[in-house]
Length: 151
Image 1 (cartoon, rainbow, N blue to C red):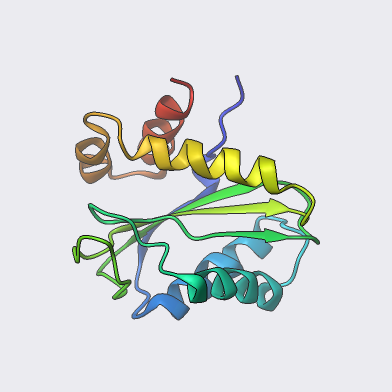
Image 2: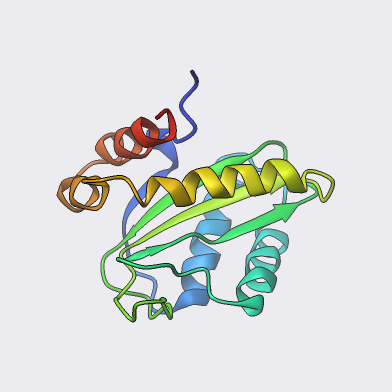
């Protein structure tokens, strides 16, 4: 099975001061990774979803997600923040990680929802949060997520 999260898609110590900075950072990295859409288009898609309700979950994780017609292929980007960007989470705990999902096309809603559900299930695995907290490299973070995605 192919790993969904590549170490090259994991970014450590992001210093975003707020949600918009975090979403711009993720959007910029998506472009650098060859998303096929421009940064502003990606940011606006993330922002539109965020405006419907916060994508910050619980226990320090946010799952920003967007469907972008111009996207070349589905992409997962993980960001570890150096300090919380002030995302309003369900449990009022500071956000430490964003696991961002970008999927192509508006006609791919079922694939988008399936991938989003898989990522959300990753957060429920026993020991996942402690593994992420102790991970200090992009490889360790990608491995922790991929291991759960394959189960």
